[in-house]
Image 1 (cartoon, rainbow, N blue to C red):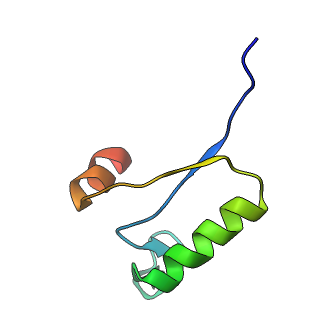
Image 2 (cartoon, helix red, strand yellow):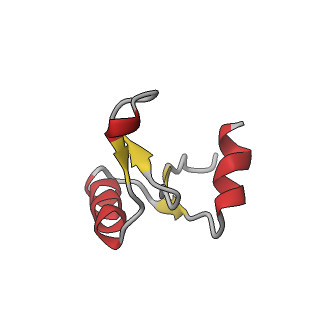
Length: 62
Protein backbone atom coordinates (compact mmCIF):
# COMPACT_ATOMS: atom_id res chain seq x y z
CA UNK A 1 0.00 0.00 0.00
CA UNK A 2 1.21 3.47 -0.88
CA UNK A 3 1.96 5.99 1.88
CA UNK A 4 -0.63 8.78 2.21
CA UNK A 5 0.84 12.22 1.41
CA UNK A 6 -0.55 15.61 2.34
CA UNK A 7 -0.02 18.90 0.54
CA UNK A 8 -1.07 22.50 1.03
CA UNK A 9 -2.22 25.28 -1.31
CA UNK A 10 -0.27 28.55 -1.64
CA UNK A 11 -2.80 31.42 -1.91
CA UNK A 12 -1.11 33.31 -4.76
CA UNK A 13 -4.19 35.54 -5.21
CA UNK A 14 -4.24 36.50 -1.52
CA UNK A 15 -6.19 35.14 1.42
CA UNK A 16 -8.63 36.21 4.12
CA UNK A 17 -9.03 35.87 7.85
CA UNK A 18 -12.86 36.02 7.66
CA UNK A 19 -14.87 35.05 4.58
CA UNK A 20 -17.25 37.71 3.33
CA UNK A 21 -15.53 40.54 5.23
CA UNK A 22 -13.74 42.91 2.84
CA UNK A 23 -11.52 44.35 5.58
CA UNK A 24 -10.22 40.85 6.38
CA UNK A 25 -8.53 40.40 2.99
CA UNK A 26 -4.81 39.56 3.06
CA UNK A 27 -2.83 40.77 0.05
CA UNK A 28 -0.65 38.29 -1.89
CA UNK A 29 2.89 39.22 -0.79
CA UNK A 30 6.19 37.40 -0.44
CA UNK A 31 5.78 37.73 3.33
CA UNK A 32 2.43 35.86 3.16
CA UNK A 33 3.97 33.16 0.96
CA UNK A 34 6.87 32.75 3.41
CA UNK A 35 4.46 32.45 6.37
CA UNK A 36 2.25 29.90 4.60
CA UNK A 37 5.25 27.86 3.46
CA UNK A 38 6.81 27.85 6.94
CA UNK A 39 3.51 26.85 8.55
CA UNK A 40 2.96 24.03 6.04
CA UNK A 41 6.49 22.70 6.59
CA UNK A 42 6.11 22.91 10.39
CA UNK A 43 2.81 21.00 10.14
CA UNK A 44 4.47 18.21 8.17
CA UNK A 45 2.94 18.80 4.73
CA UNK A 46 5.02 17.17 2.01
CA UNK A 47 4.28 19.34 -1.01
CA UNK A 48 2.83 22.70 -2.02
CA UNK A 49 0.32 23.40 -4.78
CA UNK A 50 1.33 26.68 -6.42
CA UNK A 51 -1.08 28.24 -8.94
CA UNK A 52 0.72 30.24 -11.60
CA UNK A 53 -2.07 32.62 -12.59
CA UNK A 54 -5.23 34.08 -11.08
CA UNK A 55 -7.42 31.90 -13.32
CA UNK A 56 -6.14 28.82 -11.46
CA UNK A 57 -7.50 30.19 -8.18
CA UNK A 58 -10.79 31.34 -9.73
CA UNK A 59 -11.39 27.91 -11.28
CA UNK A 60 -10.63 26.19 -7.97
CA UNK A 61 -13.07 28.21 -5.85
CA UNK A 62 -16.00 28.20 -8.27
